[in-house]
Image 1 (tube, rainbow, N blue to C red):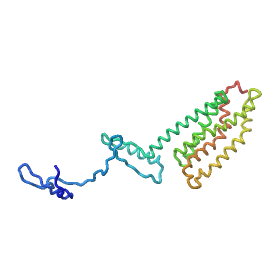
Image 2 (image 1 turned 90 degrees about the horizontal axis):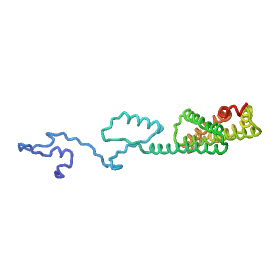
Image 3 (image 1 turned 90 degrees about the vertical axis):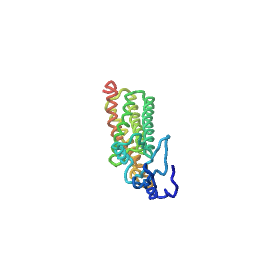
Image 4 (image 1 turned 180 degrees about the vertical axis):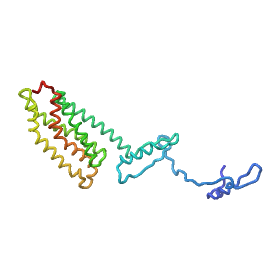
Length: 264
């Protein structure tokens, strides 16, 4: 049943709508009902044949990670009605997809470097000694991001992946020197120290040159540099510990893995 238009033009008109009681007398609707005006949904959106309401916001003055932590905490404490679900989307969902892709790239880079080193040296002691260095440099990357107050994002993940190649290259420089020193026969611990002394200058200078090159980017000097600032911070953090890892930690680890039969 639909009442005439002149009886439903305004809210007050609905209150004057006449009803007939069972005994036959007529009375207005407002006598037995409270009429409350509510705003209906102007547009019904659906996704995968399900009704959907998009809740959006603009982040200002805070990082996405901290905001999403608060949002997820609020959603955990919220008691949603039956049949209702929440799905996080937008830029956060895109970032999570990118993270998973970069993690796959990171693992693939480690695997490819391992295969290359096995083809070059054909000795697990050498390969494991070299592969341990970029893995030990990763905590330095996290420490650098924490000190500078930056969160792990796509840019910093790219810098972390670059550290694998940079630190591995410095380690290969050291072992190329070691192979030359051991060409005449089995070496000793003194040979490891001599190789470190010979390669200290190029390894340190190469890392220092890269740090100075990335320093303006890490300080966000210039327009647009802030977008790649986490990448520069991640790479610099790994380069800072590179000389210590390659010249001290790696020879010690190699001497342990190689065994006493190669060293006096």
